[in-house]
Every structure is written in structure tokens, then in C-alpha cells.
Length: 128
Image (spheres, rainbow, N blue to C red):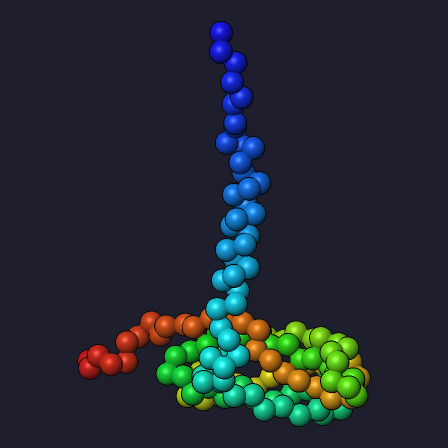
């Protein structure tokens, strides 16, 4: 009688999950800041206890579910606080306002973390 070592598919599951997690980690780095600079421009200012401003879009598409991070910096430029905020919709070739309360810091930096491109349901190129 031959005794062999059987490998269950359940024992391979953790290896597969690690590989899948690695693929997602690489996918999160799709957009370089230079790519985002092509489509979006940020303007902001400190107003009392909040940072507010606009995201300007030069794209011909809607950007939705945009997540911004407002980083509070110390005098040497080191990040000391992070505050997340959301913008529901940035219209094509337009702007969207944001405002978020922030902890006190010497200066601030605002960056886009993520967003989704959204297609219009109505194709405006078709004549009715």
C-alpha cells in the first residue's frame, strides 16, 4: 500500500489569498500624482478650524466618490496629522467644493487619494 502525502486545496488557500492581496496592493498604485495633475487641480485655504477649497476638473468625465486627505505639517514639513474628507461628485470641466475640520498645524497639504470615473447614463453625443 502506497502512502503519499495529500495536499488539500484548503491548505493552499492562505497562499492564494496572499498572492491576491499582493495583486490588490499593486493595483492601488495605478495613478501617479503626475497623472492626477493632468485631470485635477486643487486650491485650498485655512479658515478658522477648517480647511476648505475646490477640486477643479479638466476631464470630460464625472469623477465621483473622491477621497481627499488633508495633511497637517509641522515647521520642518513632516506630516503630524491626517484628516480624510469626501467629495461626492466632481462634474466634467468644472469644480467641486470641499470643507473639513482639521487639527492645528503649522501648514497643510491636500492630496487626492482615490476616485471613480463615472459614465453618464445619457449619451449626449446622440441627437434626439
